[in-house]
Image (cartoon, rainbow, N blue to C red; front, side, top):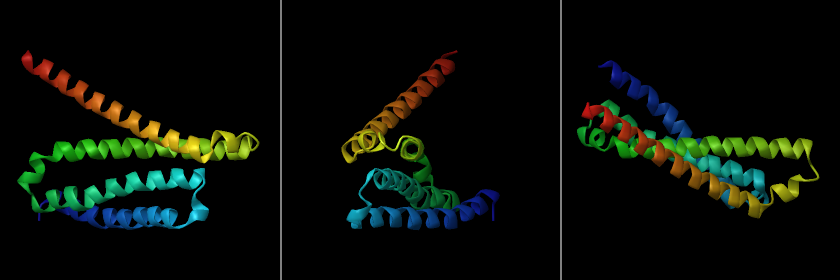
Length: 152
């Protein structure tokens, strides 16, 4: 067995645990109305994108590595773009959770207005749109640089 296949097998349990845990959090938040405040919304948002990330690793990246599937490799750039977007959205959600907790502790009087349900949903939407824009621009700029270097 090759080294890259062993690496693929190490990804299998990690991505499976990530899928189970993240989607469980999403289901718990969606089913419980008592969990529909800003912190729960931010946590669910982060769990959704971590869940997508882990699901792609479980169903696409791991089989591609273990089974050496050439079709998956041919379209891996699309999977990579989605993984980058999910990772970036997850990091931004983590940042918003940090700000949320900071304001809850140090500015409790302003916290309800700054992190109302409505504003939290707006912040999540803006974060998602920014991630898509930044990642697509980054990938396009990288492609342009690579094309320019290949001309010389």
